[in-house]
Length: 441
Image 1: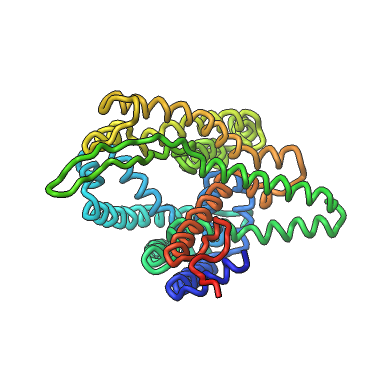
Image 2: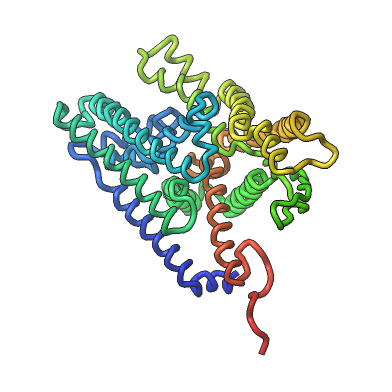
């Protein structure tokens, strides 16, 4: 493995891409410590300690902790993700966006441009909302905003919108000149930023004698097994064999080869958890604005993360949204139409409608165990916290949104590094064997 890591820096282009990506990370982390003017950071930090299990806590996760610190990157990359999801959903119901998806590079450029415009619009609206939200926070006699007013609203709106656009630009720069998916890597960096704090918490518990070395080893082993399970869930797929018939075009013969369609067990990725968390955190968020007693007490108790009502409804929502988002992400009718158009067929299945029905049945069957596994991984951190004394910072890395994003982004980045190595006749990081292309003396 050390030799393979050395091979990465033997390729000038790959070395430049990795150094450039790391430089972008440094810029992003520096910006994550520049606060918006006029904010009392101490009061804001106290408030967010009480909001870990609400929508504010979820948003702060994707913002890399910038919202709880009220930095210039407080909105994070969520406006861009929201705009992307909206465009993707519109493509299923609006013919114009559906046509853009089928127009190749030109269509993708147009969709990217519309996504940028949507990001700016959503950022402005969210910046106004965050400004009003910050101005309304008060703990006792202390207020988060030192001097609320029109100047504060205007300055905060411009600052936060510019911060989101800058993050979007950083992500695009990684796509063009770095390695990996830029937007995903920025979210990745924001999530793993919390891991050192979780490690320090565990170290303090170990030093104080609250946690034994054996318990720490058990927790480490459980974390490794959980990561392995997430990797299997992310990479697991059912391969459907496709045979292309031979056809003559001019003087050349095309087709005749055999390939496959990879149907993933978890086609929806992390989106079902995000949608489910958004809905499940809504009652807790509403309860923070209700007067004490009655409905406020019931909502706070019933929809705590360690409540069985929360766990059961959360799991059911994840299963539902897994099927829902899979239906959006993979259209069997379009796949069957394209196969028939280019002379491809699944052995033993008639082209056209029968192929679409076959793919839909296979996808429905493999999505069920995938959705159940996804639901279990999502609630596993809650179960860890409920039945052990593991803190929230560490337990969040035992599953849920954080671990799925970290594993997914890490695998995607490793695959891109692998492709660069293999193109230059080096062994990839995810393969074994000696260095290829080396002459024996």
